[in-house]
Image 1 (tube, rainbow, N blue to C red):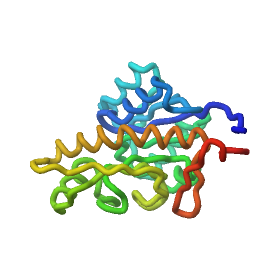
Image 2: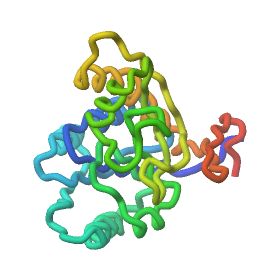
Image 3: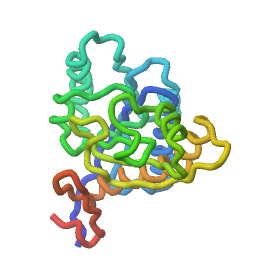
Image 4: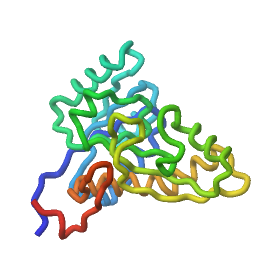
Amino acid sequence: MLSEKLEKNIAVFVSGGGTNLQALIDAQERGEIKNGRITYVLASNEKAYAIERAKKAGIECEVVSRKAYAASEAYDAAILAALEHRSIDLIVLAGFLSILGPSVIEKYRNKIINIHPSLIPLFCGDGFYGKKVHTAVLASGMKVTGATAHFVNEITDGGAIILQKAVPIEQGDNEDILQYRVMRQAEWEILPRAVSLFCEGRIRIDGNHTVILGRSENKE
């Protein structure tokens, strides 16, 4: 029998346009995120269009500007302060361009999910973000790329992989075309699925690997 658990509170961290946030909101409205709900959005940039997406969806949103803090430790402290009384069960990094420090990662160990626009361990780590990933992929001559939903640890893009999906690279692709295809065919699909799996208690972490449990295996 499935364990009876309260609905989990999800915080989504954003920095830009918020397309992955919108994918999560849309999936939530379709009932595809089981046992969880987005209750808070944190933006690192006051000009992020993701803020408008959150407002339109009626989700509380707050700007904790990265540029307001000279030191990364001070920014991490501000993030922890913003989350302190919100009972957040899961943090989702959806195009969040700031690197979280050890204090945030330790506080939310195995409770932070990121979406990365490549098939990790390829084209990931420090310096690989946004269109830079797709530029490197195209320069490599590879015929396939994709996206990865993974947990966050102290190593950039180094946490346990939850889900991946491959996307073909087509002749004539440039960074913009490939970026959109990866988002549409992979990111917007696997990120909501990974979030739902977490909220359903269907992810078991074994070292730096994950095991996806069937519903009948989700027991207290």
